[in-house]
Amino acid sequence: MQKRFRSIVVLTGAGISAESGLGTFRDKDGLWTKYDLQEVATPEGFARNPVLVHDFYNARRKNLVEAAPNAAHYALAELERRFDGQFLLVTQNVDDLHERAGSARLLHMHGELLKIRCENCDSVRDWRGDLDLATACPDCGASGGLRPHVVWFGEMPLYMDDIAAALETCDLFVSIGTSGQVYPAAGFVAEVRRGGLAHTVELNLDPSDGFSLFAEKIYGPATDVVPAFVARVLAAG
Ligand code: BV8
Image 1 (tube, rainbow, N blue to C red):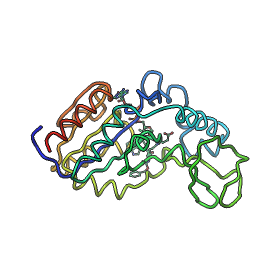
Image 2 (image 1 turned 120 degrees about the vertical axis):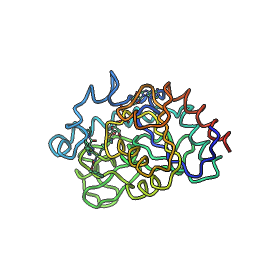
Image 3 (image 1 turned 30 degrees about the vertical axis):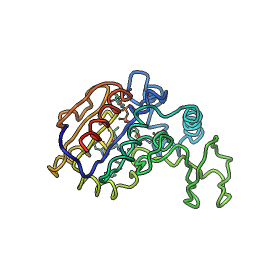
Image 4 (image 1 turned 45 degrees about the vertical axis):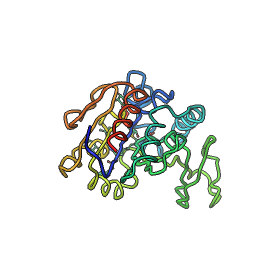
């Protein structure tokens, strides 16, 4: 890879956190094989059975606090630090492993597991413990209206304008650890190709649904292929 890049957008999915012990969604023992996403990851499911949804996210929050970033997270933080062009990391993940690895130019388009939102006063707060219907909002005091600050199916993802602007001007788009099944994230590579400017690269354990749209594909565990890829980009200066 001789080309010097000016502006990089990286998209990550659950696969980058798999080797940190956080289950993916669709792999053989993934989350969606154990839970019905309509029940636990939709506003309708939350209205129907908030106790089930709180249990689901409380368990994931406990799991996350035990987990640690891996070499793929650290490699992306290093790329951000050492790359002298434009850089943006967009993640579908609700975990905080990118932050813990040192990433700063980072957007959680599907929200964050360690944040809660009050449906009564709309405040958003950091939250590491369990949440349930009796928990009172630290800002308005109301209970029963707190929910995980995550984007459920059917809800509008976050930061879509910032993401669209970065996709429009990037000359390198890298997709890491995602199956390409959830939209609008799965549509980013097609959007970038329409601009015709960018080189597109998929780094994954196996081909995603959109693999044919990528100019370059590198398959293997994220902790192997991401550090090697970052070294190549930085070597290109
Ligand atoms: C919306 C937060 C309106 C909660 C999540 C168009 C066509 C069809 C459907 C739709 C469409 N447009 C909208 C929809 C509906 C829906 C959708 O996409 N449904 C799918 C299921 C068909 N989308 C929505 O509802 C979105 N909202 O569209 O609003 C709109 C429209 C346009 C513009 C703006 C707004 C909201 C979707 C967000 C839902 N919330 N998460 C929570 O986490 O609990 S999605 C959740 O699942 C994750 O955030 C992530 O996005 C997704 C999981 O996907 P992946 O991360 O890719 O994980 P997966 O397990 O699938 O794959 C893992 C990959 O890693 C695999 O490929 C595997 O090979 C690889 N891997 C495994 N181990 C490793 C590895 N790779 C490397 N190394 C390893 N070690």
